[in-house]
Amino acid sequence: MEVKGDDYHVWYDQSDVCIYCQGSLRLAGTEEYAPIVKVLEYVIEQTQPNITLNLCQLEFLNSSGINVLSKFVIKVRQKETISITVKGSESIPWQGKSLKNLQRLMPALKLEWV
Image 1 (cartoon, rainbow, N blue to C red):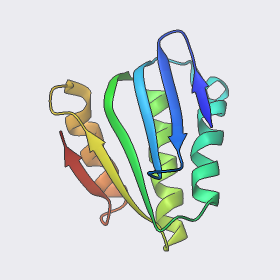
Image 2 (tube, rainbow, N blue to C red):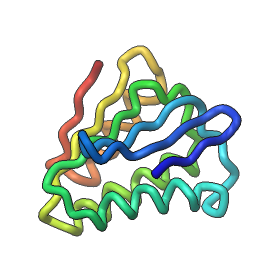
Image 3 (tube, rainbow, N blue to C red):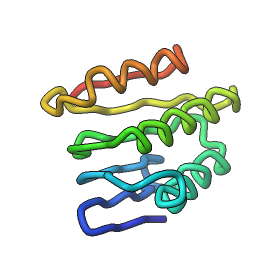
Image 4 (cartoon, rainbow, N blue to C red):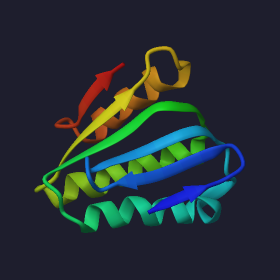
């Protein structure tokens, strides 16, 4: 499963149970993020014991996108049978504070910096 736009690419790789996000996500609101939400919900439905969300190459994410990721983390937390690792890049400014906030939503979330 994948979603591509002019300046972003989001896909799920089943072989390593990883969701990759690249580029710049500046979509306007929930409706424009719907295809990405479908990818995230699909991954949850697969009920893999461990999911990785790789954001290392996601240069920008607006507030609507942060909201989408927050809801995704909450849904994973509610499953109780899935653990999640979020990979971020220390060289991308928005990720420091925003990814730590995801950990507040799900304390068991593992945060890895690359």
